[in-house]
Image 1 (tube, one colour):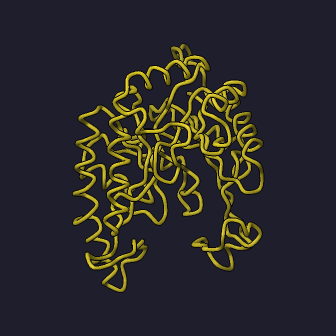
Image 2: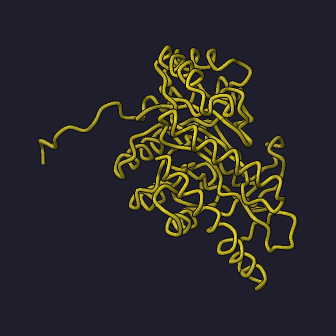
Length: 322
Protein backbone atom coordinates (compact mmCIF):
# COMPACT_ATOMS: atom_id res chain seq x y z
CA UNK A 1 0.00 0.00 0.00
CA UNK A 2 1.03 3.57 -0.56
CA UNK A 3 0.62 6.69 1.52
CA UNK A 4 -0.81 9.43 -0.67
CA UNK A 5 -1.95 13.03 -0.30
CA UNK A 6 -4.79 14.99 -1.88
CA UNK A 7 -2.83 18.15 -2.63
CA UNK A 8 -5.15 21.22 -2.17
CA UNK A 9 -3.68 22.00 1.30
CA UNK A 10 -0.37 22.62 -0.49
CA UNK A 11 -1.68 25.05 -3.10
CA UNK A 12 0.52 27.78 -1.60
CA UNK A 13 3.45 25.93 -3.22
CA UNK A 14 4.14 25.02 -6.80
CA UNK A 15 3.46 21.42 -7.75
CA UNK A 16 7.18 20.76 -7.89
CA UNK A 17 7.70 22.23 -4.42
CA UNK A 18 4.78 20.22 -3.07
CA UNK A 19 6.17 17.01 -4.56
CA UNK A 20 9.61 17.68 -3.07
CA UNK A 21 8.10 18.26 0.37
CA UNK A 22 5.86 15.17 0.20
CA UNK A 23 8.74 13.01 -1.01
CA UNK A 24 10.79 14.23 1.94
CA UNK A 25 8.15 13.20 4.52
CA UNK A 26 7.63 9.74 3.03
CA UNK A 27 4.63 10.13 0.71
CA UNK A 28 4.42 7.86 -2.33
CA UNK A 29 1.46 9.19 -4.34
CA UNK A 30 -0.53 12.35 -4.98
CA UNK A 31 -4.13 13.11 -5.90
CA UNK A 32 -4.12 16.53 -7.56
CA UNK A 33 -7.27 18.44 -8.36
CA UNK A 34 -8.07 19.05 -12.02
CA UNK A 35 -11.37 20.91 -11.64
CA UNK A 36 -14.45 21.42 -9.50
CA UNK A 37 -14.13 22.30 -5.83
CA UNK A 38 -10.51 20.99 -5.55
CA UNK A 39 -9.47 23.44 -8.29
CA UNK A 40 -6.56 22.82 -10.62
CA UNK A 41 -3.70 24.80 -9.08
CA UNK A 42 -1.27 21.87 -9.30
CA UNK A 43 -2.43 20.28 -12.55
CA UNK A 44 -4.15 22.33 -15.23
CA UNK A 45 -6.40 19.81 -16.96
CA UNK A 46 -6.83 21.82 -20.14
CA UNK A 47 -3.12 22.55 -20.48
CA UNK A 48 -2.22 18.85 -20.30
CA UNK A 49 -5.09 17.27 -22.24
CA UNK A 50 -3.89 16.10 -25.68
CA UNK A 51 -0.49 17.79 -25.16
CA UNK A 52 2.27 15.20 -25.26
CA UNK A 53 5.00 17.71 -24.37
CA UNK A 54 3.17 18.90 -21.24
CA UNK A 55 2.47 15.29 -20.26
CA UNK A 56 6.15 14.36 -20.70
CA UNK A 57 7.21 17.28 -18.48
CA UNK A 58 4.72 16.13 -15.86
CA UNK A 59 6.07 12.57 -15.99
CA UNK A 60 9.63 13.84 -15.55
CA UNK A 61 8.59 15.94 -12.55
CA UNK A 62 6.90 12.96 -10.91
CA UNK A 63 9.90 10.70 -11.63
CA UNK A 64 12.24 13.27 -10.12
CA UNK A 65 10.46 12.90 -6.80
CA UNK A 66 9.71 9.16 -7.08
CA UNK A 67 6.00 9.94 -7.02
CA UNK A 68 2.94 8.64 -8.87
CA UNK A 69 -0.55 10.03 -9.35
CA UNK A 70 -3.11 7.81 -7.61
CA UNK A 71 -6.10 9.70 -9.06
CA UNK A 72 -7.20 12.94 -10.66
CA UNK A 73 -9.79 14.76 -8.54
CA UNK A 74 -12.73 16.73 -9.90
CA UNK A 75 -15.43 16.93 -7.23
CA UNK A 76 -18.45 18.83 -8.50
CA UNK A 77 -22.16 18.41 -9.32
CA UNK A 78 -22.66 17.32 -12.94
CA UNK A 79 -26.40 16.71 -12.39
CA UNK A 80 -27.11 20.13 -10.88
CA UNK A 81 -30.51 21.58 -11.92
CA UNK A 82 -28.75 24.69 -13.23
CA UNK A 83 -27.87 23.69 -16.78
CA UNK A 84 -24.80 25.92 -16.96
CA UNK A 85 -23.32 24.59 -13.72
CA UNK A 86 -24.09 21.01 -14.70
CA UNK A 87 -22.50 21.45 -18.11
CA UNK A 88 -19.31 22.88 -16.60
CA UNK A 89 -19.04 20.00 -14.13
CA UNK A 90 -19.77 17.47 -16.87
CA UNK A 91 -16.98 18.88 -19.04
CA UNK A 92 -14.56 18.76 -16.11
CA UNK A 93 -15.41 15.14 -15.40
CA UNK A 94 -15.29 13.91 -18.99
CA UNK A 95 -12.00 15.70 -19.67
CA UNK A 96 -10.54 14.41 -16.39
CA UNK A 97 -11.35 10.87 -17.51
CA UNK A 98 -9.74 11.51 -20.90
CA UNK A 99 -6.63 13.01 -19.30
CA UNK A 100 -6.36 10.15 -16.81
CA UNK A 101 -6.37 7.72 -19.71
CA UNK A 102 -3.61 9.65 -21.48
CA UNK A 103 -1.50 9.80 -18.30
CA UNK A 104 -1.99 6.10 -17.49
CA UNK A 105 -3.69 7.11 -14.26
CA UNK A 106 -6.29 4.50 -13.43
CA UNK A 107 -8.78 6.60 -11.49
CA UNK A 108 -10.75 9.85 -11.35
CA UNK A 109 -12.31 10.81 -8.00
CA UNK A 110 -15.57 12.77 -7.88
CA UNK A 111 -19.02 13.13 -6.34
CA UNK A 112 -22.25 11.60 -7.62
CA UNK A 113 -23.81 15.06 -7.72
CA UNK A 114 -27.32 15.89 -6.56
CA UNK A 115 -30.31 16.82 -8.75
CA UNK A 116 -33.37 18.83 -7.89
CA UNK A 117 -36.44 17.04 -6.61
CA UNK A 118 -38.42 17.58 -9.81
CA UNK A 119 -37.88 18.97 -13.33
CA UNK A 120 -39.23 22.34 -12.15
CA UNK A 121 -36.95 22.81 -9.12
CA UNK A 122 -33.93 25.10 -9.15
CA UNK A 123 -32.03 23.84 -6.08
CA UNK A 124 -30.49 20.41 -5.41
CA UNK A 125 -32.59 18.45 -2.94
CA UNK A 126 -31.03 15.93 -0.52
CA UNK A 127 -33.84 13.53 0.41
CA UNK A 128 -33.21 11.68 3.70
CA UNK A 129 -36.65 10.21 4.51
CA UNK A 130 -39.49 8.67 2.44
CA UNK A 131 -42.35 10.53 4.13
CA UNK A 132 -44.31 12.63 3.34
CA UNK A 133 -44.78 10.76 0.09
CA UNK A 134 -43.61 13.53 -2.24
CA UNK A 135 -40.11 13.02 -0.87
CA UNK A 136 -40.10 9.37 -1.92
CA UNK A 137 -41.35 10.44 -5.35
CA UNK A 138 -38.64 13.09 -5.59
CA UNK A 139 -35.99 10.54 -4.62
CA UNK A 140 -37.12 8.11 -7.32
CA UNK A 141 -37.14 10.93 -9.89
CA UNK A 142 -33.57 11.80 -8.94
CA UNK A 143 -32.39 8.24 -9.46
CA UNK A 144 -34.42 7.04 -12.42
CA UNK A 145 -34.81 10.20 -14.46
CA UNK A 146 -31.51 11.97 -13.78
CA UNK A 147 -28.71 10.05 -12.09
CA UNK A 148 -28.87 6.65 -13.76
CA UNK A 149 -29.14 8.01 -17.32
CA UNK A 150 -26.30 10.46 -16.72
CA UNK A 151 -23.96 8.06 -14.96
CA UNK A 152 -24.63 5.34 -17.53
CA UNK A 153 -23.12 7.68 -20.14
CA UNK A 154 -20.16 8.50 -17.89
CA UNK A 155 -19.57 4.81 -17.16
CA UNK A 156 -19.35 4.09 -20.88
CA UNK A 157 -17.03 7.07 -21.36
CA UNK A 158 -14.81 5.77 -18.56
CA UNK A 159 -14.78 2.27 -20.05
CA UNK A 160 -13.71 3.70 -23.41
CA UNK A 161 -10.68 5.29 -21.75
CA UNK A 162 -9.97 2.36 -19.36
CA UNK A 163 -10.42 4.58 -16.30
CA UNK A 164 -12.26 3.87 -13.04
CA UNK A 165 -14.59 6.53 -11.64
CA UNK A 166 -14.34 6.64 -7.84
CA UNK A 167 -17.34 8.35 -6.26
CA UNK A 168 -16.96 9.75 -2.76
CA UNK A 169 -20.00 8.92 -0.64
CA UNK A 170 -20.88 12.36 0.65
CA UNK A 171 -23.98 13.81 2.35
CA UNK A 172 -25.76 16.45 0.28
CA UNK A 173 -25.01 14.21 -2.72
CA UNK A 174 -27.31 11.51 -4.09
CA UNK A 175 -24.79 8.77 -3.25
CA UNK A 176 -23.84 9.22 0.39
CA UNK A 177 -23.63 5.65 1.75
CA UNK A 178 -22.54 2.20 0.50
CA UNK A 179 -25.91 0.84 -0.62
CA UNK A 180 -26.50 3.88 -2.79
CA UNK A 181 -23.05 3.40 -4.30
CA UNK A 182 -23.86 -0.22 -5.12
CA UNK A 183 -27.21 0.79 -6.63
CA UNK A 184 -25.48 3.18 -9.01
CA UNK A 185 -22.78 0.62 -9.88
CA UNK A 186 -25.38 -2.06 -10.62
CA UNK A 187 -27.29 0.34 -12.88
CA UNK A 188 -24.16 1.31 -14.86
CA UNK A 189 -20.98 -0.82 -15.03
CA UNK A 190 -17.94 -1.89 -13.02
CA UNK A 191 -16.05 1.31 -13.87
CA UNK A 192 -18.26 3.04 -11.29
CA UNK A 193 -17.03 2.44 -7.75
CA UNK A 194 -16.13 4.15 -4.50
CA UNK A 195 -13.56 6.66 -3.45
CA UNK A 196 -13.95 5.25 0.04
CA UNK A 197 -13.79 8.22 2.41
CA UNK A 198 -14.62 7.06 5.95
CA UNK A 199 -14.92 10.59 7.35
CA UNK A 200 -18.49 11.03 6.07
CA UNK A 201 -19.51 7.55 7.16
CA UNK A 202 -18.37 7.78 10.80
CA UNK A 203 -20.94 10.39 11.77
CA UNK A 204 -23.71 8.55 9.94
CA UNK A 205 -23.12 5.62 12.30
CA UNK A 206 -21.73 3.33 9.60
CA UNK A 207 -19.19 0.73 10.72
CA UNK A 208 -16.18 1.35 8.50
CA UNK A 209 -14.76 -2.15 8.29
CA UNK A 210 -18.23 -3.60 7.55
CA UNK A 211 -18.67 -1.07 4.74
CA UNK A 212 -15.23 -1.95 3.34
CA UNK A 213 -16.21 -5.62 3.29
CA UNK A 214 -19.58 -4.85 1.66
CA UNK A 215 -18.05 -2.84 -1.17
CA UNK A 216 -14.95 -5.00 -1.37
CA UNK A 217 -17.04 -8.10 -2.06
CA UNK A 218 -18.17 -6.36 -5.26
CA UNK A 219 -14.65 -5.14 -6.10
CA UNK A 220 -16.14 -1.67 -5.84
CA UNK A 221 -13.40 0.23 -4.00
CA UNK A 222 -11.41 2.15 -6.62
CA UNK A 223 -9.61 4.62 -4.34
CA UNK A 224 -9.37 5.48 -0.64
CA UNK A 225 -9.31 8.79 1.24
CA UNK A 226 -7.50 8.68 4.58
CA UNK A 227 -9.55 11.12 6.61
CA UNK A 228 -10.83 10.89 10.17
CA UNK A 229 -13.85 12.28 12.05
CA UNK A 230 -14.60 12.72 15.72
CA UNK A 231 -18.20 12.72 16.96
CA UNK A 232 -18.62 14.90 20.05
CA UNK A 233 -21.31 13.15 22.06
CA UNK A 234 -22.12 16.14 24.28
CA UNK A 235 -23.37 18.09 21.28
CA UNK A 236 -24.75 15.06 19.42
CA UNK A 237 -26.93 14.09 22.38
CA UNK A 238 -28.66 17.46 22.15
CA UNK A 239 -29.00 18.01 18.41
CA UNK A 240 -28.01 14.80 16.65
CA UNK A 241 -25.45 14.60 13.88
CA UNK A 242 -27.27 16.40 11.04
CA UNK A 243 -25.40 19.52 12.06
CA UNK A 244 -25.51 22.74 10.03
CA UNK A 245 -23.29 24.65 12.46
CA UNK A 246 -20.36 26.23 10.52
CA UNK A 247 -17.20 24.12 10.52
CA UNK A 248 -15.30 27.02 12.07
CA UNK A 249 -17.50 26.99 15.20
CA UNK A 250 -15.74 23.87 16.39
CA UNK A 251 -16.91 23.85 20.01
CA UNK A 252 -20.57 23.92 18.95
CA UNK A 253 -20.48 21.14 16.36
CA UNK A 254 -21.61 17.54 16.85
CA UNK A 255 -18.67 16.30 14.79
CA UNK A 256 -15.51 17.56 13.14
CA UNK A 257 -13.18 16.27 10.46
CA UNK A 258 -9.95 15.36 12.23
CA UNK A 259 -6.41 14.42 11.28
CA UNK A 260 -5.73 10.69 11.15
CA UNK A 261 -5.58 9.36 14.71
CA UNK A 262 -7.45 12.27 16.30
CA UNK A 263 -10.89 10.83 15.64
CA UNK A 264 -10.07 7.14 15.95
CA UNK A 265 -6.98 5.51 17.39
CA UNK A 266 -4.11 3.69 15.77
CA UNK A 267 -5.60 0.24 16.33
CA UNK A 268 -8.73 1.27 14.40
CA UNK A 269 -6.67 2.48 11.46
CA UNK A 270 -4.65 -0.74 11.48
CA UNK A 271 -7.98 -2.61 11.32
CA UNK A 272 -9.02 -0.43 8.36
CA UNK A 273 -5.76 -1.15 6.53
CA UNK A 274 -6.03 -4.87 7.27
CA UNK A 275 -9.64 -5.03 6.06
CA UNK A 276 -8.70 -3.22 2.86
CA UNK A 277 -6.05 -5.87 2.25
CA UNK A 278 -8.57 -8.65 2.96
CA UNK A 279 -10.84 -7.36 0.19
CA UNK A 280 -7.97 -6.92 -2.27
CA UNK A 281 -7.39 -3.17 -2.13
CA UNK A 282 -3.69 -2.43 -2.22
CA UNK A 283 -3.60 1.11 -3.62
CA UNK A 284 -3.04 4.54 -2.14
CA UNK A 285 -4.41 5.83 1.14
CA UNK A 286 -4.79 9.44 0.03
CA UNK A 287 -4.71 11.79 3.02
CA UNK A 288 -7.32 14.55 2.78
CA UNK A 289 -6.61 17.18 5.40
CA UNK A 290 -9.63 19.20 6.57
CA UNK A 291 -8.96 19.45 10.30
CA UNK A 292 -9.65 23.01 11.46
CA UNK A 293 -7.90 22.43 14.79
CA UNK A 294 -4.43 22.17 13.28
CA UNK A 295 -2.43 23.51 10.36
CA UNK A 296 -2.31 21.63 7.08
CA UNK A 297 1.40 20.86 7.46
CA UNK A 298 1.14 19.55 11.01
CA UNK A 299 -2.00 17.57 10.16
CA UNK A 300 -0.40 16.00 7.08
CA UNK A 301 2.80 15.11 8.87
CA UNK A 302 1.03 13.52 11.85
CA UNK A 303 -1.20 11.56 9.46
CA UNK A 304 1.79 10.31 7.46
CA UNK A 305 3.59 9.32 10.64
CA UNK A 306 0.66 7.26 11.90
CA UNK A 307 -0.22 5.66 8.58
CA UNK A 308 3.41 4.69 8.11
CA UNK A 309 3.01 2.41 11.13
CA UNK A 310 -0.25 0.98 9.78
CA UNK A 311 0.31 0.29 6.07
CA UNK A 312 1.85 -2.86 4.68
CA UNK A 313 4.86 -2.33 2.42
CA UNK A 314 5.25 -5.93 1.29
CA UNK A 315 2.98 -8.60 -0.11
CA UNK A 316 2.04 -11.49 2.18
CA UNK A 317 4.13 -14.61 1.88
CA UNK A 318 3.07 -18.24 2.02
CA UNK A 319 1.09 -19.21 5.11
CA UNK A 320 3.73 -21.72 6.19
CA UNK A 321 1.94 -22.31 9.49
CA UNK A 322 -1.37 -23.33 7.87
